[in-house]
Length: 235
Ligand SMILES: [Zn+2]
Figure 1 (cartoon, helix red, strand yellow):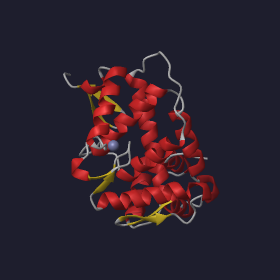
Figure 2 (cartoon, helix red, strand yellow):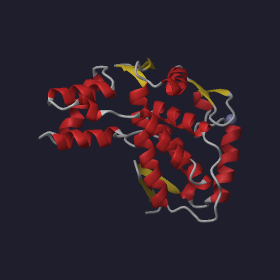
Figure 3 (cartoon, rainbow, N blue to C red):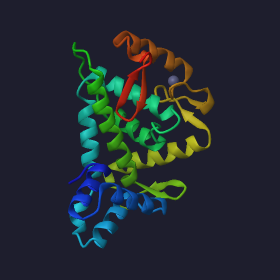
Figure 4 (cartoon, helix red, strand yellow):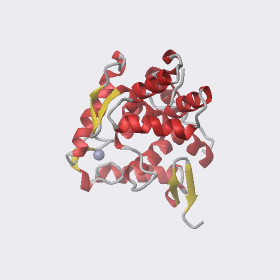
């Protein structure tokens, strides 16, 4: 079973005479019309006379893989979180959709602290896992939440029972976000969205920057230029 929208679009493209970008455009078009990712994939598989059962996305497996990544290593998890937080706040192409970030936070809150080790994480590793996490989370929100042309409307009909709580949280937090309210992702205080820094209230932002600079002194000097890519500011 496929885990991400990208995997499944590749699989559809391989089984048909269409290119990846053609299939992706059709999926996008259907989703713009308010059709869910799963239904868009199903409808394309149907129209190509393929067995729709071969083109399912398992939301449980997505959560499983995300948890595995986050439980691997403490510093790595902290750095993935920092990059994701930076991307959700950024403008332009590299912007991480807010619901995908809420999904990430939900899963992060489900895992125990990962073990700490002595090795230092390479930026390639962090990029690889962050990119994978983004794909997993954007796919997850597309399948467990219901969508309309204006955004998330609730929990998807076929959302598995054990993920309904996550879908509900994503829906609720996205609605709050749209009305300008943010709950600090660290301590939970409700703050005006304009007063947040890196999605944290001012106090928590200060504490985190301090911890990050201790763990990885160069991280603040790196600037993200897109999904899975970073560059040094002085490059
Ligand atoms: Zn806080």
